Image (cartoon, rainbow, N blue to C red):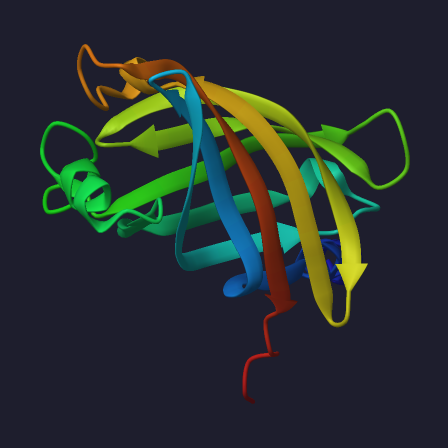
Length: 183
């Protein structure tokens, strides 16, 4: 009986060894590039929140659940940004957050590179997404860097428009180690 209890406690301790990190805005960037009338338009989001469980030695147990504030969209043009916040595009009053959640993290083809497979939710629509990302140690946490392409129409963002359907998203997420719980 003691051996079984010891095995269970050891297993729980190993599982709890996976470090928890909280994404922060400072040093992070969520940027996108899309074409409008044939010209690149760059934009960004902020308002990060969520939790990251990560150990580069054990990526199979890693988990990302991160979201951003859709209302923070910034393309450098207030008139355009307000239009993008409206119901035809992001509908931020009804859908205030954009979320990405991992289903599987696996090792990539070189050290410090991993493969993200999970779900992206924009404007109430959830789609599968996968992309490679780097995990770089940064102080007491990590800097996660990656990029992916999506079709805005897959998420019912905007209708027929001079805006390109496809856009690229670049992620640079700083995640700081979550303090140990108080005893």
